[in-house]
Length: 213
Image 1 (cartoon, rainbow, N blue to C red):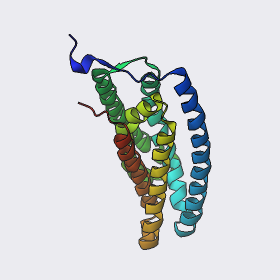
Image 2 (image 1 turned 90 degrees about the vertical axis):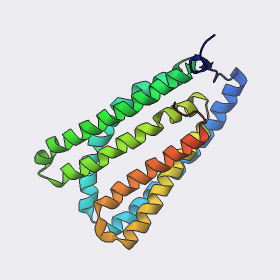
Image 3 (image 1 turned 90 degrees about the horizontal axis):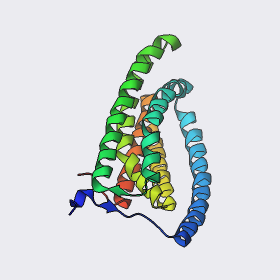
């Protein structure tokens, strides 16, 4: 008899359930995208009035150094998680560990790119900013598998709600902090990134019952 950790977990849904899930999920995704854009515009309008344009310019230099390594590190595993017919507990634990390991690699790449591009932009502040933003790739990696598992179950409504909740929480914290401590500048935008990812992770870990072992 197979060990419990080796037994596949059946996430299959019937054709009718799939159709209903896709239709319902699509509507929720569209609504969430519209709301997400409104939140982004409102947050940007508020922060841009209270934070110097230089802070946004500095962040715009650093964001590609964060997102490109993170995307390369996570894309393949997320697709494999969603498309694989069955996944045992052991396979899920392995995928989780691989996601975290690749998150660490992506963070290290971001730090290295910060040192590489700081002289190119003649902006030494980019080095420290990249180091702090690199941690977001590790934080994000802790939620990649759970998001993929929700997508695998076609629970798109819950997934977009988690992401929208994270975005909203990050925006609210940033606005409160910029009112209280406007001198923090670009670090308010960094804090916004961390809060958004933390809320997303807490939510998807709550929505998806599987936990790594």
